[in-house]
Length: 375
Ligand code: SF4
Image (cartoon, rainbow, N blue to C red; front, side):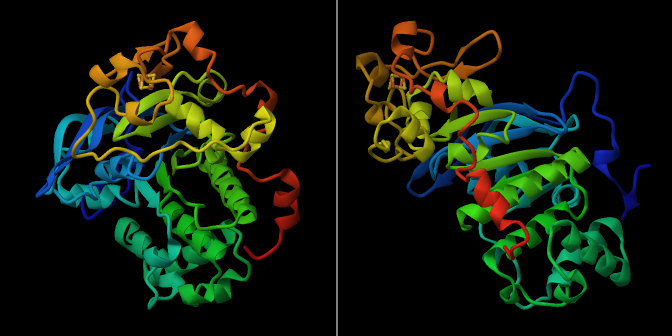
């Protein structure tokens, strides 16, 4: 039954039109118009996402991963931001054409985001229960008592011991891992269709990282929600993503299933990310290889392939002509001039030995030993 609050019909109760997807991002372009020039922050991003699926979005800082998500959520100030092309549809409805009032209902209720740093995302002067219950009162019309009861239930769900007591505590009374769990509880409060997790484990140690990722997967199995996992670390999404989009300089440079990205990658930037995973370096019996240089300025993009100044395989054509997406029959694409050249693809890292082993960077033993400990 469609739930109504303030005359708003909950979009997640609306059936997805036939032939459409839960989320469709179609050639999205969003640029910032600044005094220094035009920042090409999101430049031609496309993907689809269905319920129960996980998409990993991977790239270095400044590659456009978070800005793409924030554009979908209507969290970018326009101006200086401006949609320059493309669209994004949630259950067939354009997110970009919604009013701010409609977006306020979507955010938290239909599409929720877990931010990187729980300490700055939680308000230090309000008790955890109040912050958890806010969305429920706003989107679901819960009374104060109902919101408190549900907050206790949510804290229990994300593995916080003694939730009846902790719901009345302040963020500083929680450890880093526990605060991140609170953020997950907050994001899950209204049972969103899509959970966007922006580097949710970056500030946490490797043991807690594994617990948080496991928790998100458990929640997904229970609720069937879709997850967009944004990270700079390919290893984090290795065993949780169904498909992966690798971004560089505001654009997707490779897209495919997790297996295609790890074991049949066709882009030198992805090769660099794979060679930066410690476990992979061990398996290749080579030292950890960093990607030299820095990402380009999004105001003054180099001509040709944006990765050319850092690419060890760049030749003249790379500096002259921007590569198009070369797509395989399965939809795996790569923005490299040589993505379909078998001789070139021999330079790819040998991931055969690490099949099934590259994971969250956390050995099973660590994850097991951490069970029951206060994260
Ligand atoms: Fe490297 Fe050239 Fe491919 Fe760009 S097009 S990734 S510079 S080989």
